[in-house]
Length: 367
Ligand code: SAH
Image (cartoon, rainbow, N blue to C red; front, side, top):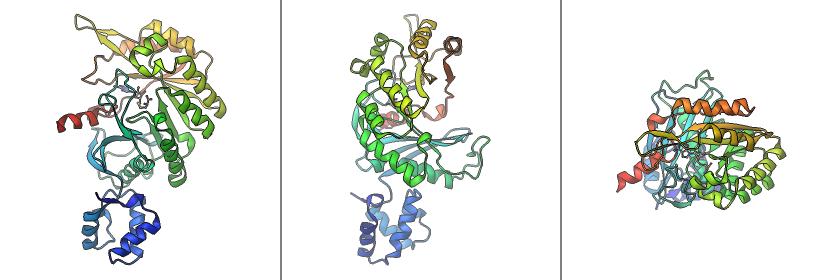
């Protein structure tokens, strides 16, 4: 297997390079390129061509390799399918927005949570990602921002010269709180090495209570998002098996404790799901006005923002996206009850940017 230079300490990299008969300063040059996210040796313009070829035989820059890179039609979303050294695939999405450049990273290869509407969990969990495997995703995004040749890839009303990753959302494949120590290690590193402020990091969880407690103990003021998707235990347990272990009341109590500690607004994610009835018509599932009333009740008095997410269709899953009217009726009830809410703009649906779809497609093509 090829050596991953990103994983080497400075001393190890120097030894590796001098063992190849090269002067020591080459190690420093290579380190600079890797820190900037160079995905391959061909990009390292100040190295002799022969050395680049030799390195390519022996080594790889990062612990991930880009297998697919898709740009959305508007040029603002780039989706990567990345291969790990053991052949596992993960996804990562770069979103250029008016407030900055945001990267959505994966924390696991696959997922064990079994949520009934999600593509990421269909093939189960393969393994946790290491700190470096998570960090390499933002390096690749950073490299892409700085070296993009797509003329459309300028942030809407943004500063065209600001080509840095500014925000991180841990909402890709996997459940971050099942891999909490590596995810914490990743966030520390993003903060120290890339200067990304705690308040610009958002971690999304389906509600692993001991994991939320670990974040409380860790004590950094990141944003916490809870994937709620249902306002009653009965409904939630039908679509999210984790609810059989940690009930809504426990999850919200732990989340409150976290957000009160840091005086932060809690983010609630609520996917709006429909179902097909026997006549093939779409009927509302978790997005009826009655459920909106129950959700309002559950969240009354909390400092929170409810993100409403119309479900992104996954072929293998037996749900449907509700109509725009149903979405607005649901939101109107929340607004009437004084709950802060917004409808999450869909990004990159033209490139299968939603939730594990790219990885799944790749796996199917392999077979
Ligand atoms: N495991 C974590 C983070 C990854 S999922 C969590 O559960 O929060 C990120 C978000 O996407 C979650 O809110 C998840 O429920 C949602 N999601 C999964 N599949 C989706 C789909 N097909 N359409 C819309 N949102 C989806």
